[in-house]
Structures are given as structure tokens and as C-alpha cells.
Amino acid sequence: MKLNKIHRDLKELYIGKETDVILGFKIGHQEEAKIYAKILQIGQWYVAPFSFETYDSYAIKLTPNKKLVESSVYLRHRGDHHLFSDNLANLLPLRQLKMLKSPKLKKYILDDWQKLEEISLPFRQYTNSLDSLKFLKEYLHNETKLKYLENPSEFYSEVYLDFWNHYYDTPQQKEYTKLMHLMIEDKSYLPEFAIKDYGVWKTRAYNAIGRRAYNLIDIKKENQFWQSFIQPHGFDATEVDFGFIPYATSTSFELDGITSKFIPELGYFSERSNHPLYKVGQILSKYESNYNGDAHIEAAKVIDEELNDPFKAWDALVSAGYWSGVNLGNPNMNAWRAAIDLSEKHGWTEVNEVLIDQLEFYNRYKDKV
Image (tube, rainbow, N blue to C red; front, side, top):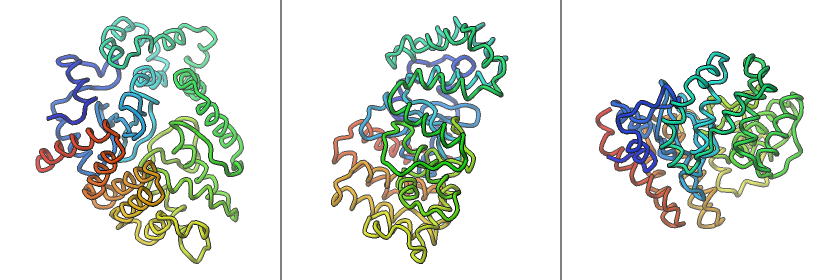
């Protein structure tokens, strides 16, 4: 039974081959039906899982306006997801980057370089990225970078940024890096509100801004709160103290402060009281631990049909799926079906195919886990 296209294709490429030791992620597993069914069982139909580590799994974030291979790869940990790679091709070098947290592993990568090239070849061919390891190899032989690689506990953020600035060399990466530098260096810094294009970092950037706004007491910054709230829940949550390197944290915990702002007596969001998501915020402010996502489904319908914004409607459906899984441990099937209908309506062919395939997979295996 096919889970999704990427999962099927990579399994066919690596049938009978071990990948986890060299590539850093495992493709195919005797327990995979159980593992993936559990992911879908808690309502996470909005990602396309395809590989995993010992405890975590990698998945493509379904993005309506992108092909699967061009969409971001996320690492799932304890139910939430954080950005790992801007696309499937760059997962390979960025997974090697993760190994550079330990100075010992730099030597292992170089010692096994021929194996890395050999085992990764089918993956690089599949993603049309034969040269994706070139920067990694040059970096490991660069004398000016040795101080970073020999003491990664102190300099890993610099290494991390070097890799991301290379593999995601875009204006959006520069804008995001500038923002985060300012916020990390000055714990009281909050940018003036502006809608900016942070690319694949959009959700993390606005969540960080919202979190910082909440920490600055007696500052009314409802625009920052709103932009964080309308991001798809379950992705790129931030803690109070954040840095360049994403790590898994709980969206439900992060949003506690922001959803509390929807209490009418506080007077926030008065200019947005007619927005479909305003009602969702009010419900979450009162019933967050029992919320099943239904209000997000209703909001998505209005956002698509009346506000003509199918992408924001998609985000609302993703949030519906997230809350159902967090609070009830089951998928909100109405959200899943609405996502199938929305993707069909707007011609998001690959997304639609994944949603349908994973629904068939879930129905087949849901009673076997």
C-alpha cells in the first residue's frame, strides 16, 4: 500500500539497502506501516512522511503552490514539526550538517566519503541534485572553518548559517537572518510591524515575533500576535529564548499566551472581529484543551469562498487537523476531507494525490496499530 509518492519512489530506489548509518536517515522499516499509521492517527494528514531516525521522522510539508520535491522537509518530534530543509534535495547535505555537532563525526564523514557518494547517488539523481555534496566537501577541507568544526559547541550556529546561506541562497534567507540576528542580540528588540517575505522561514519568523511581543509586558502589539496566530499550527513553534537553530517545542504551549489575548474584555483584535479566524481565537482562549478543530474548518470555508484566499484556507484546515490530534488523539476527518476538496477545487494535483493516498493508507491500517 502506497503511503505517498515520495515514500514509494525512495523505497523502490533503496530496496534492500541500508541508508541510516551513512545518509543519517532510514528509508523503509519492518514497522513502517505501524509508525506511519500512528502519525496519521493523530491527524497529521498535512505532511507526507518518507523516512525516519531512531525516534523522529522526516516529512514533506504539503504546500499547495509547490511540487512535493520542491517543498520544505520537516523533522517531526513529539507531535510537532520544525523546519529541517528547504527542499528534498537539500535534506542530504543538511542532514550531514546535523552530524557536525560532534567534532568526531567530521572525521567519520570524510572517512566514509566514497560510501556517502555511492549510497546517496540514487537520492541525488532522483532530486536532480548531483552536486549537492560539493559545498559540504569543500567546507570540511576549508582551513578557515576548522575553528568552527573543532569546537562546534561554541560555533555551531555559524556553521548552521553557513550551510543555510549556501543551500537557501535567497533574499528571503537574508531577510530572516537579519531579523533573527537583531532579536537574538537584543532581548528587548521587537521590529515594527510589517508583512515581509521570509520564504520557508515565514511561520518561524512570525512565531518568534509573536513570542517576543508577548514577553514585552505592557506593549500592545496585536498585529504581531495576529500574524503568529494565523500561521498553520503545529509547525515551527518557538520558546521564550530562541536562536537560529530550530528545535521541537509545543505549538499548543506557545500559543497559550497569544490565544489569551482573544478574551473580549482585553480589547485586542477589535479591527479583526469580523475575520473568520477571530471566532476561532475566542474559542481557543476558553476551551483550548478540549478544542477539536471544527471552528477552523468553518473559518476555512469562509476564507476560501468569501475572502478568496485558498492558501490561508489551507492553513486553517491544517490547524484544524493539528488541534484534533493534540486534544483528541484522532484525526478530524471533516478537515481531511475538506482539504481533499480544497486541493481538487484549486488544482493542487500533487497535494490532492497525497491526501487521498494517505487516507486510503489510514483506513487500511488504523485498526492494526
